[in-house]
Length: 526
Image (cartoon, rainbow, N blue to C red; front, side, top):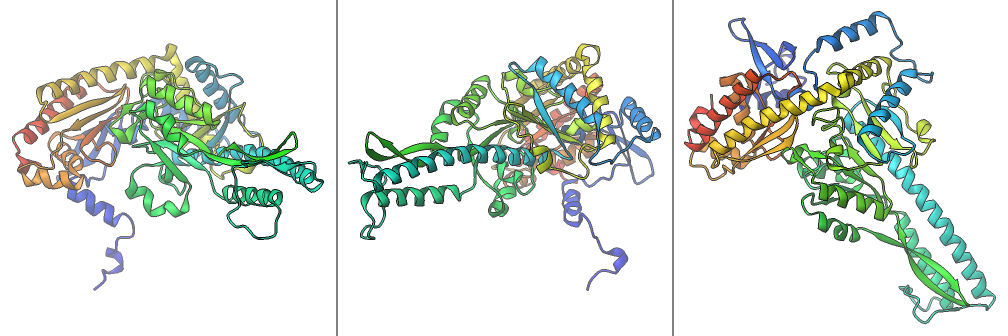
């Protein structure tokens, strides 16, 4: 029997049931700084230390007073929020501020970066995919024009008897006996092969463990097969490269590259020659891989990635959606390892914890000006989110970048405590990864645990959520797993993290580690 209409659930039914099962099914009613609040069964407000902070979107925490006051003033001044197809100077001001930061942190920025604004991180990624394809198609068109001209010249020479086919033309027709002379047969086979290649879409490169979004195209850059594979037919092809083996990257990319066949006439001899074909659209890279336990790229990997892009001629897209905006102690996490991008994406903290905002930045040497018209959005570049983004940048840059120094110092202090937990429980904690206020603590494999409440969720990949539910219930601290593996927890608090918050976190983790060490799984469940 179906439920009465007033009892039916129309949103989040499966999700909320699952959250209840993990001990995370709480509705928060208020937020401030690093603290979330909920109301318990007795009507009392309960404070929860928030280490999730909007998946790293709250560099200044929940409802930062300075940002809130600025947001109110923007609304009180009644600035136009939506005035599409008009001059919007706030976009130019924001782009200029971002370029100034880039020039300071990233060498060789040259003429700077053009900005295209969006609404979310995944949308910014897809904007980069679109622009990369526009750029690739321009390279393809130039190459095809050259090949067509060469084919026509060779065909004319063959018809007039001024040329013959070389002894080893490399390209041989699949079928013979169709009445074509050797020259026409060679050209026909070249055109057939080229047409098949030109009909194919681009191939993108990304790193293993990558996360670049869950929209139709961006999900194909996200490694997790549970999220990606069901929609593989809707998006482009992606080849995932190992981030921890930079020496293998170039060899792996060689297996992706394709050749377009050209027909050249040289001293009366016609031959087919392979030309490098721009099949690779772009290489998407996160400087710190959130879904890989918050692991930063090494400088060696950064150099290898840059070398691959320079070799094949494709743009390097540095995805700073998660790691950017000061969270790692610098505005761009990529600046720590000397990684220079052709495109950049930013989001999360760009909205100040209040608005949704993102931007894609394109080096002007590669930017296609027509893209400003080809791509558009109703809600992107709105006046409200743009005003908040400028305020956030002002706050990050204030006092010589005090916020960056604060993020680095608070991150170092939190990492010290996490490392002390690891040293105390080496049998339980595998690693502490990350940089600044973007950290992950990875537990050892518990799939063979003798305690079923530990072993069963470990085998199902949900132990991290069970641990998060326990820490929330017993310690009033909010953590969540890092990525899909579920055997680690993330720490992405704001710069307002206190020493007391850090000490509480250490105590909670020691409690969890003791449960795992002594296989007291019954304590994890309610």
